[in-house]
Image (cartoon, rainbow, N blue to C red):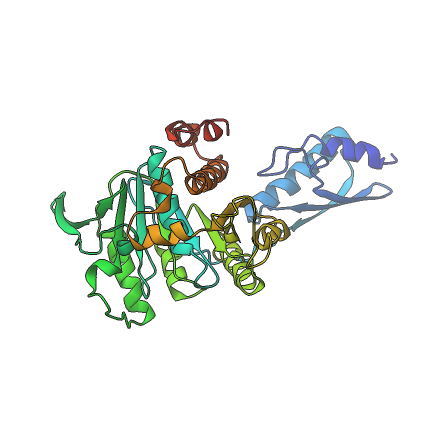
Length: 380
């Protein structure tokens, strides 16, 4: 009897590859079938490396060809194991969640002096005005500024007993819970700590504090890309990062590095977007004029170049600086252009967080959208 290769392949369709749902022809496990008179050679490759799987495959091939094609066929079955290439292991820096805190947003800047802390303070206040429960961790160990910006420089965190453990109670003002190394140092005292000591202090403010239920915790990170940033990302699962920059080239170069840090494989923190601070100057006496002192739309162009969202621009206005100096963030002012700027940027941040969390249970995203008292967020 002359054996037909097509008949042999048809017979092999009756065999399912171990560990797979398809038959061995459909799955591509059959690499080759060669017929020499009444002799058949079948080359098979399977993914299951066990000896049992290999023997089972060989026996089934012998049986099906003898039963379906020719019972006297001389059959040689070569079974090879195709072990899938192991994916390179990436040491992802992931922290453990803090009970009660739903979203953690890191606010960073590649360069100092771009207004990162001012933006963080006003984002926190705007979120609180929208009805969210907000916490703010001043992680700028060497230059803490939140106690002054929230007019709580003279306050000290109290100790509270939670489930038999003593915890720090964050200082609260304007609806925002705050912890900062500035609460534990004297005015004018320089914090001269090495990385491990600074990291330990941050971990205490994160895990030894009673933050309660928070919709958002904002982290005011130090400028640059260094040890504190890595310590924070090792300690906490960051929901996303916001990068602040001015439009000038020297600031944009560092902002680019800040974005790159979050996007590294080992860190992999989604960048929610870039905010442009000190975008332009408009004098009171010339309200229709805009003077682009530090350059025009530099951060916007950077966001487009890096394919990350542009969250908005904040003008260079004297009242923003004055509000921070007296401890009353400018976003608290009502019916002003500044309040509107921060509100619109905050809405976009919330929208980006909602988008970021789409893979989570729907109720989590719904809570975020419905708690924000603004129609633009609800539509997201």
